[in-house]
Image 1 (tube, one colour):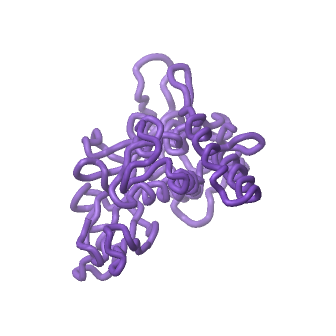
Image 2 (cartoon, helix red, strand yellow; image 1 turned 90 degrees about the vertical axis):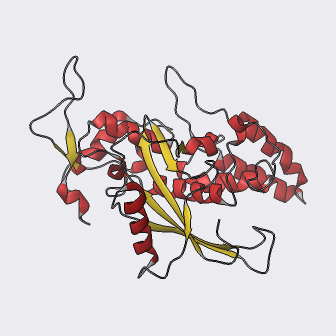
Image 3 (tube, helix red, strand yellow; image 1 turned 135 degrees about the vertical axis):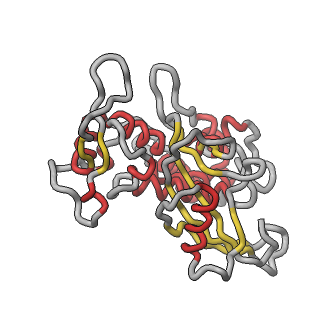
Length: 305
């Protein structure tokens, strides 16, 4: 990180490969990329775009994610670290290198996918530890509120899991002392607690995960992870990787239809059986007005509950 007190930019660059959402890291993979704010650029976003073009040879769109000043972060409360984080979602045309790590290395409880060969993350250890923490609250009322918050955030009956609450779940685990990125937490098993990150970078990552998930079905954000040509199954698997959940196939395709157009001539990625139809994003999807087409289901009905 930069010298304390100097403003810096933290880059949260995500992609999807091999059905895993990946984030670009640096050094020992315990830090997100960062650099000091430079006066050479007319704006912070211009500096971010220049960094993306230099580092990844891409001109992807960017958006400001979070701005914060952390006192006590480096032990000197007189001079907080001012950080501005920026989010960029990209498609990589080549195999990701070692600096790309899965979101779920750091936030393993956020991956709720299951199929014939895998089961979702078992949150029972986290929930049990959180429930043991509840009696430390100062009154029965506060204990009840904590239990209710645990149930809401972790989808315990009668509540359902909300993908866009990744940051809130991380903050609750921090508050309970179960995980910490600056010193050891109560949970030492990385398969349960996830890998730690330097400073507050895991919180920044969780903020990005929440933002991306909340907006994944808004306009063209999902397509920023996709190649120029794709099958609907490939697009669905990208969505599932980002959400950490399986989706309803028919509802997902009804959502996607207004945004895509078949590629002619059709070229299948597979060599056996019936060729899968290839699609690309419809040009009108980049405009503010949605493309015409059949009525689209609400995004919260796309995800299996």
